[in-house]
Amino acid sequence: MNPTNHLAGLLMFILVVFASVAIFFYLIYCRWVVMRVATPINRFDRIGERIKAVVVFALGQRRILNSRFLDAGIMHAFIFWGFLVVSINSIHFIGRGFYPDFHLPFLGDGG
Image (cartoon, rainbow, N blue to C red; front, side):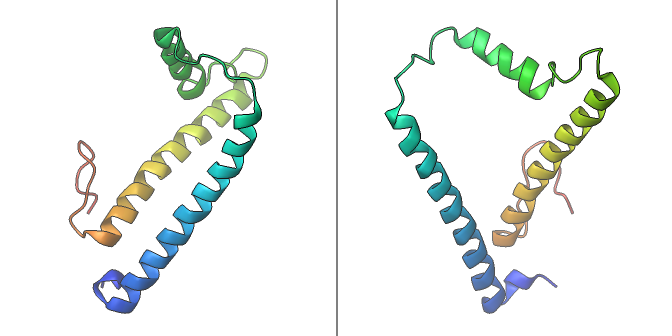
């Protein structure tokens, strides 16, 4: 049984998704107001270096995986990567709520 096959379930699903998106954009707006007050900085220089830093430090968890706290760093990295997987799976769930055959490319149909 798919709850979104019925009108009441679909309306509740849309309401929850809409409320979540509205709260998200409200919080983004609050941060945007604070950032507008700050001094502007050119963030589009050294694009390659910045992308490399995102891959190495954010996705690769380089700072956390140092030799001083290696055990804790490994645990932290696996938890972080697990949350990335859960986030991608959440996109599947939301997409399936609207379209039962929805799936992200290269990830299979999830069914």
